[in-house]
Length: 285
Image 1: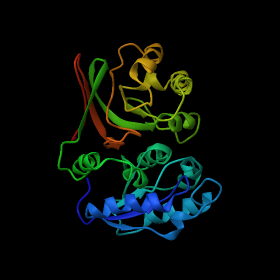
Image 2: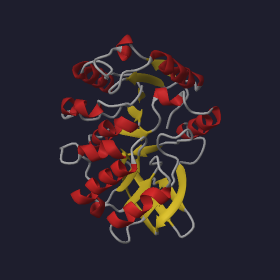
Image 3: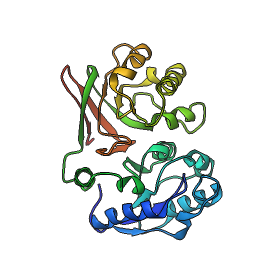
């Protein structure tokens, strides 16, 4: 959870950052009472990246090792986070390591880093904060500051009550990690999936890729945020791909949507799906 006065370092591991949009998001964090730090390196450009792979990796490693920051908040997603993974393979979290905040392309980094002991939240990037309505931002703030319960409601797909570590995030990014050493171990896990801007056949392709890899067979549960299409479009696809009896639910406010909330990755969560409702909450043991 965030506390007022926490020191935040903003890093850019992926796409090039637009200064105007970033500054709007920065003002949101400052209005929340956070002490935000960033360098001009944030606005470097190399092709469509926020600087070279080396520059982005060195920035992230320096912040992960720096003292005095409670939070590392990604400026934006886009593409490029996965290119940094080889530079992070020897990192291990320490007791005072900062918590990482981000989503979308950050799925590649965060799922790997939580296996190395780091803490991470699937939460909007700084630039995305500027796109959210004020009311949605306030709900997000209350959740992140611990003023409202850490539980999200969704709609049932397949009933069941399970617990396990939560992994996942952006469907396309996660699918692209299959077959690499950086794909998370999903044995007994609850998997979160969300996506945006993908044609339905591509959503089908990514889900099929996960199914063919055997990933769904390892899960204890599946939770879906927004996939960029109405449920009636992708539900038949999932019904053909998921193992029978796997507890699953959809419609959680997570993803590239104006009312998105947040949830910690890597920690144990509980998924309760009944005939009429679904609830995702964090366990405390």
